Image (spheres, rainbow, N blue to C red):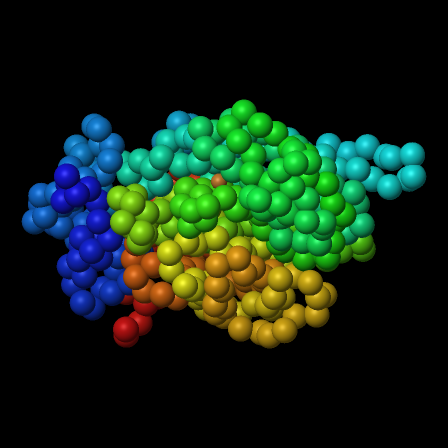
Length: 385
Ligand SMILES: [Cu+2]
């Protein structure tokens, strides 16, 4: 059974089959050539790979396609598209309380749902509101927040927020069951209430045991508390770094940001030249002790946890343990395609790679993006390894 499943070792072996000179750049920047040849070759050499996708009818295309080949997952079936998730901020519903304070409310439903995490690779996810990562909840410092959680899953879950709140609101199994909180059974519900504090970039996730499983299945999301006076105008986006243990061997086979491996290679993130770009970066990755983010040909201001308005460092690489997060700010001074990836090469080769496409948005239609890559001059951007 197990040798018929996709495995991390086989995928990495496939990546290693790339001509040495091509390296990482060859895999991801020549989607029509290096990457496809390498992975397609692997699928022939290792019989298990082509049939191991977990998709009942997926082997036909997958054996000749790769993460980086321009093939896409079925976003419609998934119910979400990582390109749309980037800038999808969920502000909930608001109303003014008698005290004058603003109450901000959301309803979050846990659901079990199969999603496609790379072309042909299906995964039995557990989701908040049907997507992985869950919705990016966004509030302003000082507001009163209420998140009504409904457990529509077959498994018990919670919502544990990073923030400042009482024990009952902590989403911790064993704490608060008598008051209706703690572990929320299938069919159950609970309203978490707390103040939006401190300002910064936080996260929420399920805290049910076995914890690694409940997080790895997809129960996490970003939680932004804006400072009272806001931040400077910028093109903002959320990047939740994650991965998927598709054969349940407690290591990941697929890595990425916002779930789909190599998605932003096939659909580069379009950003305007010379304007401020603000990235909300969260590490939700399970099973690996650290993750990282690196952007090519540029540097960014690093605001760890987003809890200060002063950056801590101008850098091009940050490392995050699970649950760590940071706000990154940068401007791109030149048009073109700029890679970003986890600076852990294994992760990058297993999906944690993307591109920013800088320039005039009118010429950057996402449908043409993959084709555009095939027309790029080869060897021009990588340089010697
Ligand atoms: Cu859970």
